[in-house]
Every structure is written in C-alpha cells, then in structure tokens.
Length: 250
Image (cartoon, rainbow, N blue to C red; front, side, top):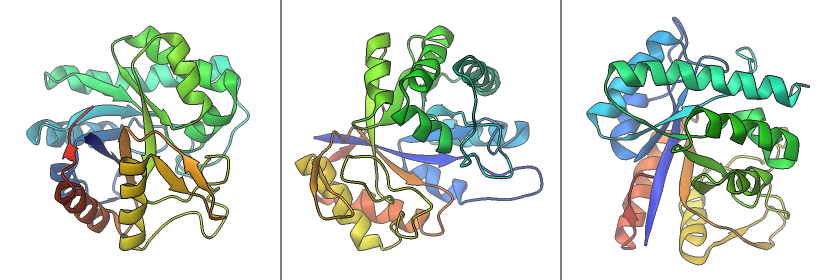
C-alpha cells in the first residue's frame, strides 16, 4: 500500500512571510505551489520550485481565483470561459519557473473556492479540467474524492487522483464542511492521524454527523497555512510508516 502526501505551499506574498515551507517540503512527496492569483508571486514561485527540486518533491500548480485579499476562498460569479483562462494563465506562470530550473510540472490541483466550486458544478469542473488537458495532457489532475472534479477529469482522459484531507471535516455527502462552520477544520493531531489511517486503510471517513462514507484516498492533503501543519505532517508521516504504508510521489 502506498500514498502521496501533499501540501499547499508557496503562499507567501511580497514582504509577507507565510507558512513553514522550508521545514515541510522535506517531509512531503508533492507540493502544490500557489501561482500568484490567491497567493504567491514571482519571487516566491521561484524559491519554492528551487526548494522542491532540492528535496526531489513533485511539483504541482495550485491555481486559484483572483482573490489575494480573501486568500482565494471567496466564491466568485465567473463564467466557465474565464475560469479556463485564469487556469491557463497560472499554469503558464509556474511552468516558466519549472523550465528555468529544468524540472517538470507534475500535477495540478485547484485551490480554495475554485476547488470547491468545481467539486459541485459540472461546467466549472469541465472548464478547469479542459484547461489542464489543453495545457499538457500528461499532467496529473488532483481533485476532491467523490466529486465532479474527478468525474469530469476522467471524461477528459487524463490521469486523475482522488484527494482526501487530514485537517478537514466531511459532510454526509462526502463534500468538505464549509469553512463558515467553526468546526470545519481539525486542529487536534491525534484526530487528524486517525482520520488519515481510516481513509487510507479502510477507504472510509466519518462525517461530522457520525456517518461512514466510502472514499478513495490516493493523496493526502495538509494545508500549509495552518499553525499545526508541520506537526501534522511529521506525525502523519511517522504513523503511516509504522503501519507499513509507503509514502510516494504522484
């Protein structure tokens, strides 16, 4: 049994430092790097790719909505054609830095509200996944397990992996609990570790209402902006290894 361990990184901006990228990157297998719309900038993208290359971590684009103030977590009323364009734009930006450092972009995972909108809206999911296919059909697409992101990407014929979350709670229908809910996130390390083990070993997750949900776990996400991120990554990695589960890049 093997699993990928990913983290959303490169989310500093200008003079604003953010997260613990230098400490986290050596412990993960895939990095989702912000592309400048919800966070990150040209300098941060450059540094983060260099760091990922140094530690042989898979590099992925993490495109989001044009929402620096809201960290890409505000829903926006955007036409699918514009969503297609903003995804293409951000993939091009990150890929430019990949080329100068002679590394290949490995995967794409939408960020925040864009990710959530695509998980529930077929037209948005199709716009996002078409952008990925048109940019590079060899890229791996990362989407929320049991969502329209997965089904629409599969229709496009690209390689798809289902993502689960260590630090988020789930609704009964398999969607993530909205961040408007004060109990949307998990901050207790033991709870996060147990949720991960159940998802990876049993392919189940317990919803916020106590319901067992079937779930496919190909990659585990830990949000890099959480104050607990480094501890979560460390403890989850150690526990997976003790269970005999290999941690491998996508």
